[in-house]
Amino acid sequence: MTAFLEVLSFSFSVTGPIFVLLALGVLLRRTGMLTDGFIDAGSRLVFTIALPVLLFMSIAKTQIGDSVNLGMIAYGLVATLVIYLLLEWGAKHCVQPAQDRGVVVQGGFRSNFGVVGLAYCLNAYGDEGLAVVSLYLGLVTILVNVLAVVTLSRSLHRRQGAGKIARGIATNPLIIGILLALPVSWLQLPLPEVLWQSGRYVADMTLPLALLCTGAALNFRSLRSEIGNTVLASLSKLVLVPVLLGVGGIALGFRGTELGVLFLMASAPSAAAGYVMVRAMGGNASLAANIIALTTLGSILTTSAGVMVLRWLGVI
Image 1: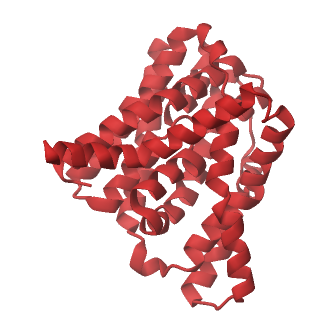
Image 2: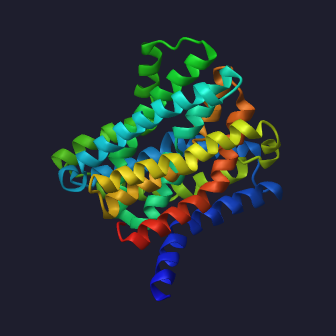
Image 3: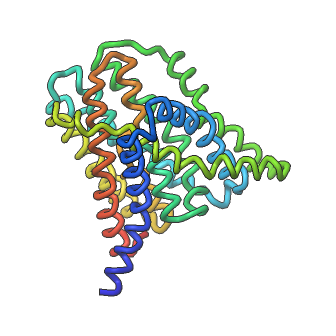
């Protein structure tokens, strides 16, 4: 009984704070304390400044060679690509109408890495988890953004040139923050203490603000429509993807923090950026919003259950 309670306590410590802040965001939105303007400005602040600073600081103060397992990163990237191909195959046979296939596929494999996934890892492993996840987050973000453009373009019959995709990646603030940090880490360049302290202030507000805005932006009323494709994408995101990544990681010998990071990042809900991309490309934006809302709500439960199982098996 004591062992079970320890497992349950660890699981709640990972997902509990996320649930509280998301619920607080929902409550503050309903009371009018958080407005649309605040949500839009807060989300832009997180994406363009706070989160890049957090990733920069994490990588810059870490010796990459000592903290990063390139095998883990390679496995995560390859597994993500394989899962994407499986979802494309499944959507071809199960999703109607055909123009919604890309929305279902990207909703099924594209995680909210930078907010919920990162928060899961920080709650579970602290600074150690942040050091392991930072470079992985940057590389997998590039991959899933490219794959999201490909699947949406295919289903909507719209062309996105390689130059446009490359520009989108090159101007992504998260990628810029990571690239700027790499030479600082490799060369162990000293930075003025005033920059480190200022950066810590900015980094510390990243996840609370991001989670509040995410919770405030949720709209559960839209879940009543297009429930079939919504559930299909959500099951893929919350069950299929983390199970496949987790089982594959165990089979390849990953344990502890590395396996935990792989599983927790995969368990994060569908990325909010997916809604913006679908809407901009003329796709079914309401379906994308449904998937984000349902996976955000369900991720707390499925991640808790997954962490309990992995903790009980003694692999994380």
